[in-house]
Amino acid sequence: MATTPGFLTDWPWKPLGNFKYVVLSPWVAHSLYSFVTSEESERDYTNFLILPFLLSRMLHNQLWISYSRHRTANGKNRIVDKPIEFEQVDRESNWDDQVVLNGLLFYLFNTVLAKGSRLPAWRTDGVLMTVAIHVGPVEFIYYWLHRALHHHFLYSRYHSHHHSSIVTEPITSVIHPFGEHIAYFLLFAIPVLTTLFTGTASNSSLLGYVTYIDLMNNMGHCNFEFIPKWLFSIFPPLKYLMYTPSYHSLHHTQFRTNYSLFMPFYDYIYGTMDKSTDTLYETSLKRGEESPDVVHLTHLTTPESVYSIRLGFSTWAAVPQSHNWYVWLMWPVTLWTMIINCIYGQTFILDRNILEKIKLQSWVIPRYKVQYLLEWQSQAINSLIEEAIIEAEGKGVKVLSLGLLNQSEELNRNGEFYIQKYPKMKIKLVDGSSLAVAIIVANTIPKGTTEVLLRANLNKVSISIASALTQRGIKVVTSCEDDYEKLKLATNSKGNFVLSRSFTQKVWLVGEGLTKEEQMKATKGTLFIPMSQIPPKKHRRDCSYHHPPAMLAPPSLHNLHACENWLPRRAMSAARVSGIVHALEGWNVHECGEKMCDIDKVWEAALSHGFRPLPLPN
Image (cartoon, rainbow, N blue to C red; front, side):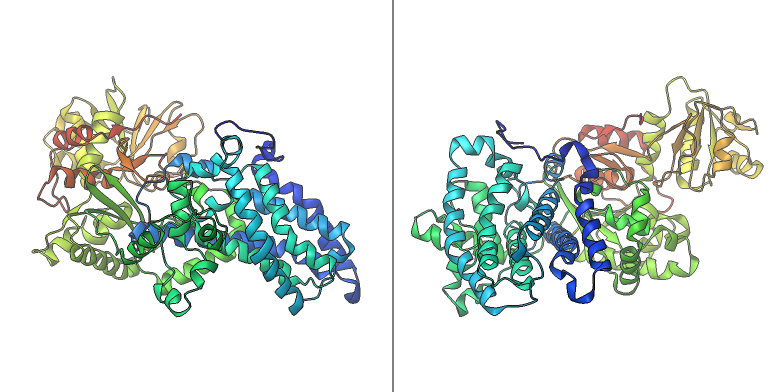
């Protein structure tokens, strides 16, 4: 929001929220009906193409968002190092409002103006006229409009909303108040209306011009430089005709320079070109990939989770991952992403963070949870994890934490497989089991609890939790006789283990695969506490479900603007936190296989670095 919002700040359909697309539905319905019912010779292809064009603009913008976030995560050619936080993501979540506005105006012009319908596919004179008018009047008027918007009166009421984003993303380009968008639309309508009234307009000139604006807007607001220097060497006048991301980035950091739209020559003419433009451009081009200190290695969960990661839909990534019915409508796209991942998928960088002097990155294995459960996929997945470890070792990474199923006992013996295969590697592998135990024992079990029901496969974490609880005088109940006998053999607290099938306990410690039938046996008000990193599906409204073992990140951890799977904002899984704490403390040991660190020591270390317990969900 602008510092002092002025007239026409809010969008008219803001009260509709996510249902704002209904304002287009009458126009879309009429367009489709007219196209289907009209004779071939009477069909208005200009009107019919509006909806596909709006969808293509959405896809165009999304591709830029994903590509830009990938490039800024690995650091190559990055321009500004400052972080992006959730506040910016929320402010820019309505980037599609301008697509809705343009759609309404396209339909309106097509209906009201007789010359705006049934346009030919191509007219060379119209294309050349569009180019000439943009280079001349549009660029000139925009320059002075932009300078006017930086006057304190208009800036405080309108343009300051756009400049709230110091570090820009492609969608930052269209984040303006409604009134400012109207001004831009009128400006960019000059070439369109001129060609319409002169009878030289075509679908190519109209749609091509809008695509050009989208392309340049997205490119200019990327936070990485990629326009090669040789391009300007071959054709030196190009520096006056095309801006670069670093050129416009300076406008967002310096505010009073580099006002031009896409062609910088007016900044040269009127002396508003920033003196550091060329230096920043060359410096950004020379910048290489970043070498992190800590890497968290995770993987995709469901096929639909690709939309909820940081490289997917920014607004979906900023909230905990959930199962939304409308995601099924995107199954054709989802299927293609699955095929591409399976055939060409390579581990990729998801995001980067900074805590104190420690540089952090998250890497993703492009495989899904269901593939981890298939025995015949184990070798291929282990190879991907192994390649990631070797790559991290080559980059000088100090600690690599294994997230989700990358550290499962069945897959690689909690990471011990890699330690035995590469005994001389310097990088330390961490599975986060010690901190997971500490989080549940020290923070998650409600005070006053006298007994808990253990419903999970016995593994490194569940056995350690059971042992720690019995040592604190809490009875651990299990309904499985084999588990009961194994627990007594694995721990020294035989007296506090109970074999019972009553299911009356108010606290359940659960692992993966908790079924609906098992949950229905719990009494009202039961608290389900996951011990694994993957939470159970919730089937009881009268019970509570805690998050998987996780902690809240300290305020000093920057550039955190996406949720980690199903965890709330600024929450990090135990494995991810463990890797960070391991590096901050300088512990020169692995925490994999059967190895466990002292849980009290790990818990205190996490708290000392600003990590905080995660409260019970509402």
